[in-house]
Image (tube, each protein chain N blue to C red):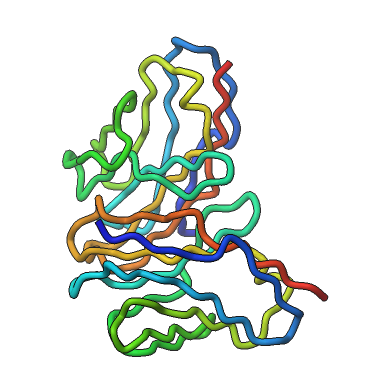
Length: 113
Length: 111
């Protein structure tokens, strides 16, 4: 089925390690997004991408790196994980019009010890 | 930047209508009002959006005040599956940075 999938669903790692969260969508949507959601709070935008090879910072980009070599994939990398990056991470995609709905994955729960 | 204010929680009885309020007193003329909801352990799900006029879809209705400083999401007959956190968001056209979820309203539906 078409959709947006995130992997892994759960990840435990240690401070200082590099970790990459994967996001794949099958709709050929132009835009893709990464958000983090901390316990009891709403979502905050980390990075977004308007198309392959075009990315831009969101509200909380520090400590994260993204790339988008193919339209369907948008990986998020924590180059040196810190405890403050423990969170649930959501990937989303949408059509080119910024007023179109965003479609979200089920999230990756990341714990950094 | 335009932000929204919502009650932290609300409660409803099953099969009764629910009116979820949202205040956005600093809204600008190009801000669209979007509503998403998030069920436990899932990603947010789009519900409805509008600019000035009231909007209806299969999930809900959106009533927007004439001065656009507030809006109300209406679930016509709440079901247990509607129990979720509902987010009211302002979206600036062609500016993806300006998409603040806020902390939302947690809706509890009683059988």
